[in-house]
Image 1 (cartoon, rainbow, N blue to C red):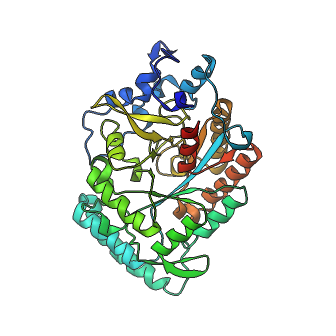
Image 2: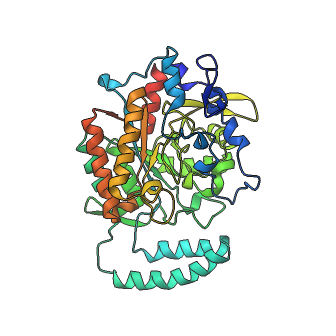
Image 3: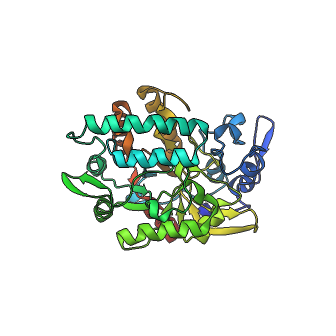
Length: 390
């Protein structure tokens, strides 16, 4: 199994398509991505998406071409528990825990005012007024984002549990970005009809056999000390080590971030995917060890690649802009590709998008389809542990 998660040069020399040759070792090490970063790429810029990917102009984003060729050249598929044909990793980025909280709205607007550009500053002033009105109107109504038990119930029905990536709270963040999450771990929420704090909800989700991972701040992607503080803050809440991470907005620099994550003590990352498309960013759905391009060495942190994100498909303002039925066709197509090579299908659905009925319906349809395909369901950490045990 280690051959599937290491940078292995001997199993495939090149992959040729459309008069262009792709070297899988170079692909998995991130060299193609590093070479294709835009010249104005800097920390404030959102991560370049699929259009900068070397596989995109070849029409290969929806095929795990590295895995296909590995198998064609004598490689073996991963072995999953109970002889299941492939694995599914359900994940959630917890960007918001309340819709009607004026305090959280005010924190978000303050961050836009202090750290955002001109547009964000104007938006923040308007948002304060809207937040006051919304809080007043809905003062005595149940907040629709008090819904996390619904995700656990839906997943339990198909024998699954998931990884929830939580923000570490404002006190653990030294430099704010206007896009950062706005909730504190001491904020009140309702979970399973019980009033509690966010911290208490996190502990209960952890107790129910889900994994808690870190969803850090925007500026943590190149700062190991910042990541360590945020990791420790969340570990104090749950009382044990956190091993998995996904960067907020997938804010990631392949030249820097893998080594930073490893230095901060994480074992598994699940950031490498797309915000505006689905598919195989590095041509694989097999976990592999990331590479330090500066030190020219393989790292100890394993990538569990992100394959499908809800917003990439369903956001009406950017990305693929699909309707529910068309998005489900993409889900089935990508699932078939993962099943063929026996890899890992990693899904990201944001809990706050439960407000959008079509997004929620698509998730339920996806779970049903994956159960019918007899997939094995595991958290990011569980997938990583299985790969390490082989």
